[in-house]
Image (tube, rainbow, N blue to C red; front, top):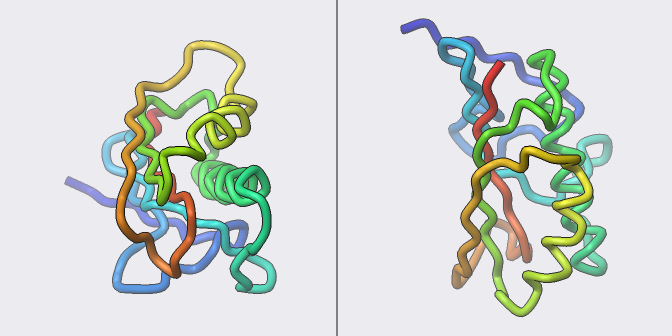
Length: 126
């Protein structure tokens, strides 16, 4: 098995001992992304819609580093601090896909890194 790792400045640097994403045999396994501005390193604080948009933009930055885009995503996992935010997160998340939506689960968790409200991980295939 050959792992390929291509860090990018278009998404936040890891805040622990992990990679932004790892490519193995044409499949990209992306670590969970939160709303950190990759240019400044600052954590977003504002409405959940803006937080979700920044998470999705960070995902897009990683996809681009591997010469992929949102159409390559086959599976996502959304972690929410509060399931009451589901509809608002879902509306923003859905705007990044045209059709052939990826498989997904959404779960409420008691706490996320840096106390954010939403974290999204995904798997993409070339």
